[in-house]
Length: 80
Image (cartoon, rainbow, N blue to C red):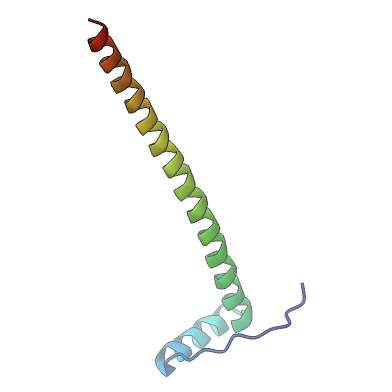
């Protein structure tokens, strides 16, 4: 996929210098490191949403099970 857009942001000079030094030390391009971070961030967001949905489903099932137990208990007591 060809890059066709830009993101411009400000960073303090100390952080920029440290970033550029680390990138140079690792023989990487600043853009490839930043693109990798953006992609990883996007993946985390998708995974987080999936996990949240699964947790909601589990909690809903737990509540439904508890309701069923309470209903059975109430029906059993009213029959007695």
